[in-house]
Amino acid sequence: MVLPYDSAPKFQDYARPEMLVTTGWLAEHLDDPGLVVAESDEDVLLYETGHIPGAVKLDWHTELNDPVTRDYVDGAGFARLMSEKGIARDTTLVLYGDRNNWWAAYALWVCTLFGHPDLRLLDGGRAKWIAEGRPLSTEVPQRPRTDYPVTERDDSEFRAFKEQVQAHLGQPLIDVRSPGEYTGELLHMPDYPQEGALRGGHIPGAKSVPWARAAAEDATFRSRKELEAIYQDEAGLRPDDDVVVYCRIGERSSHTWFVLHHLLGYPRVRNYDGSWTEWGNAVRVPIRRGDSP
Amino acid sequence: MTAGAGTLNPRLQEIAEEFGAVGGQQRLQLLLEFSDDLPPLPARYAEHRDLLEPVPECQSPLFLAVEVDAHDTVHLFFDAPREAPTTRGFAGILHAGLDGLGADEVLDTPGEFSSQLGLQDLVSPLRLRGMAAMLGRIKRQVRERRD
Image (cartoon, rainbow over all chains, first blue to last red):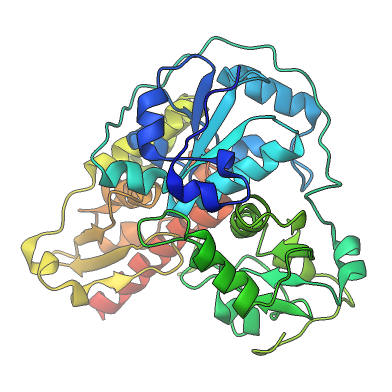
């Protein structure tokens, strides 16, 4: 059961307008059967302080990751998680979160690996919903359990591994970390603790486009025209390029993956989730320091 | 004084037991209560934020101040936004567990105290390190104030 798409004029310029909904659309459809809203935040307590009424919580750290191996949950684990949250395979799943939808885009990317058919992001995320004075609730909804089918994760289309990135050298790469992380001056995000990368710098050939440039001040995505100016005019990507994006653990780059693939329509964009915490620790991989790609 | 040399004071011990007595989701609720209970800054700091020390190891903005009075009693002050409830919650735990204690008791708090709350599976290791960093800075300030 697919809910109607949001026909907001701004979205119609994007390659896949159906991937976004406005806060107004969501408020109108909040009680529709067939819709589940899920909040995914950087701060794991934010949902508990108040969330969009009826929204479930999707925790990137405890729920989407395998607890032992550095990988995402498998098909059975994902099916269990979705069933517990009351999400069916034909549910329209709208994701939103804090910090320009940073973690919501990550959750959406992981759900994409399992091929969930109808995924959408709330344009502007949590910040815009709150800025507009829309209601929040601390009530945790008890959605009836579903029987989500076990679907194996498909890593081939949208995920890149280290060896694939090594084979990709010379082709377009986008580094979405902060400028200091890119040049190698910092081993971690400004104001964040060190996360254990032994070497600083970037993957040779990668262009630096910090992820949050794709977001406007109100946390919504920039217009298609503005995005093209950033990624095409400045970073030099061409619409038929095969692009790999990366950051530190693959979360910030999920946001850029969403922009390039769904909003600008690049057919082949892969997120390298090993990212700098793998590359910056790997033996004998090439690294470049400084400003230039 | 090396981190981890001491034992938990009775108040921190009680907090650790509270966390230990409940399951995962309730632990987050408990952390939220500590976040809500963190007292606001008194005017002398609210109006002079430059007197506060930033704790960049936390993933969200956090500032703190430490006073040691004439009776060698420690007073703690924290500033953390409501939009960052996890970091606020950590500050709330430290306030509840250490404010008003003697300086020696504060200095005796094990550096790895945060790992005794059973939050490792719920909160990313990065955030827990933020709490350890707050404690480290509190202890350093206590030592400085006493000198």
